[in-house]
Length: 210
Image (cartoon, rainbow, N blue to C red; front, side):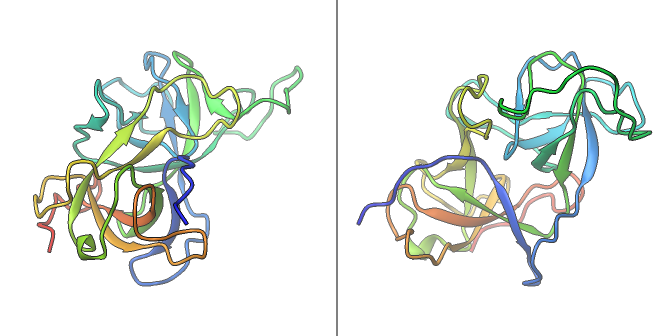
């Protein structure tokens, strides 16, 4: 049976040691000057805009085409701090909070996000083209469809870009470390794969795939 395509970005699942991901993350600021929305599951990088608070500034990894020339990647967004909460003091400002809308950081809005940024994390994500078992160990790119407001899900449109075949190029941002072994996943198009960040802001400058 063919895989069902359900792109929702990158989800941390475990560490390279095999230890399960336990929810650890760090707080980062997305400055108001960043015009691209940020969704849960987005890969982010350090921003070229200056931070205005006590936390480093980040932006979504995006590009003009399907395949993103990412450069160093910091990690994946696992949560959005509500705009009414001060992440420094934890104090909530007055007013109501809508509970029936997707959680994301809108364009051009200063907001804080929670990022799983450990260099040894392994993420689950969907590949856009068939990934063979022989591709495990090879390097791939990052892709994304239009980065627009999530009207239904609030989740990331980013995926593993495997249309350009996985290869040994050390500068490619991701490395395939396995295929997800579940009844709803098989080798073929739109398969779910495990990847690690090959070019990481706090870690590797990139290693050649095998």
